[in-house]
Image 1 (tube, one colour):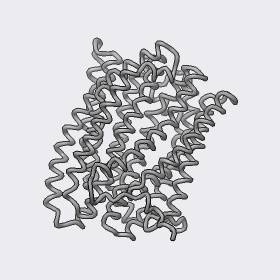
Image 2 (cartoon, rainbow, N blue to C red):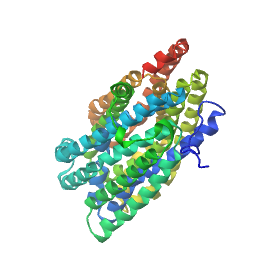
Image 3 (spheres, rainbow, N blue to C red):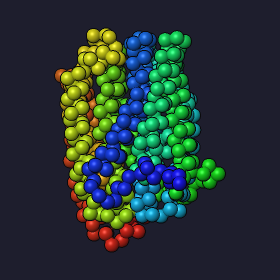
Image 4 (cartoon, helix red, strand yellow):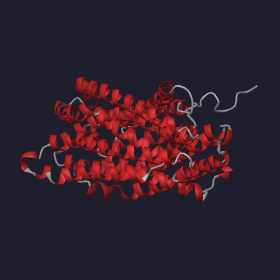
Length: 464
């Protein structure tokens, strides 16, 4: 007898030991995120080694604006993940089916909107970000092509979020592995053989994103149970859309706020010239691998918390949070210090220019040393969001991260003796610390409120 689709890949999050299952969920997700980052890393490495520092700066300087324009829709995928996990834990199959079809149609429409916005507005946006004239045309070309692949990117992210809701993080890893290999091969071909420069790496990235999207959609169409996708039933169910948006929009705004502060910081970095821009681009790309590793525990925390809340297992929420915090702190601390120790060698992968490597180490020594704080901040937000509280973590992030960074650049950075690149980089660990402490207070208050509502599971679900 054939196995039921998805049976081998799902994880029972609502019973048994938490830590082994948390790791079983988070590790494939971590590797998936790292592979996804390799798309952009391959772009940066190839242009840095074979196209020059101007091309490296052009590609690297787009990271913050890409995040700014996509984070709102990525936040909606978090809302879809939370809602689907809650319904899966509560065994409400019809509601889960409606969530799947609503979420995927929203992802397609959102991707199309991003494609149009990015293609038409790339040049103007980059001018606002004070991109130097010598890299402006290259950066515009890369950004326009990159955004044409947004429908595929959004479909993959939403599809993978729905698979995570039922505990399946392994198949997205397999799909991204294949897509990553395709991306690297096409990068090398388009840049070295065809001499397409930044256009070549952008085309390669879009092609690989299309492959991963098609594979995850194929997986959902063959899945069993209510998570199965039927393309004929794609429809926006208003109730499910509202529930996704209640969590997803605040989550997306939080991501946009982080990206907005990063855009301001990128503009400040751009004022120091091409060498600092290139070094920062390479260092930032290395950091994203650390972030992907700690962020896997944030996403695991969301799915575990949401499923257990749906199943009425409130007693498991705090132990889930503590284990996720521990894993994120250890992962961020170890990888951060390894990056500091190996920094010159890692930066040498991106560029053989000594000034660029030196500029990159300026960022790595300050930001990576305390990267565990970023993991702690993210994981505690995952607990709050998984419990159904969406607006609170957004507001705290607005004040503790975005507001503080903007104030830091507007006030401290403008003082002549502090107008240095080091002052810019210090804003990261400071904002992580302040935001984590504030979110910890919010978690304690939210947990007390949730415990008082233990006898009202339906109201808890409706809060999503």
